[in-house]
Length: 293
Image (cartoon, rainbow, N blue to C red):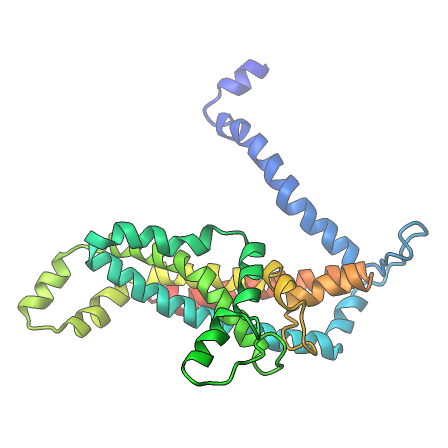
């Protein structure tokens, strides 16, 4: 009987997919369900042994009355927007340069991709030294041109943008490679027809390149937004959410709530809200950019 089931053309694909489904459940669905279960309890590091009382949606209601959580959403929105604009703009520019100048592209492509393959912790420590007030490279260049050095990571007004610059430096290579690969899929016929009609380079870029790149742009923006919104390790190394919560993103607040303050149930509620925000942003991107594509 089992041999007959395995030999059946209808059931064989499901049998072959069973190990994959088990693995998928183990590494994605089960952690999500467990995290949601924890978020429904008042679990703390102080009551792990005695048991946590069931509180239902109390942690979620508490979130949106928490001024620190609302502040972290504001900081995350600035961080994501600044990083996304910088990564996409520089990534598209570099992708165009490498696409239309294939000769030197082989060498520069390897150089440009180095930030992407480095560990986030290494990048964080490297930028700490670059931002150092006395010996950092950036302040040394400012002194060289006659400007005053800046306390990049200790100034409330500058700390967040210092993180944005570091994140742009790390994430731009991904956008560059992603969009360069998409550029190679665009056929040459539309450009030749536009050239015959007298279109300028800007008109070809605006009316041919950008519309044909929209599917790739939508996917790239979704990935960059999610990765930036969930970024944690670089911020932990560089600022730990300071000074005065100036760089306290939602991911950083989730870490502090769960592992510094010991509020495991509350931290789990923050992760569920972050997941919902990621899903909402993905839907918005597909509706605005993907539908036009």
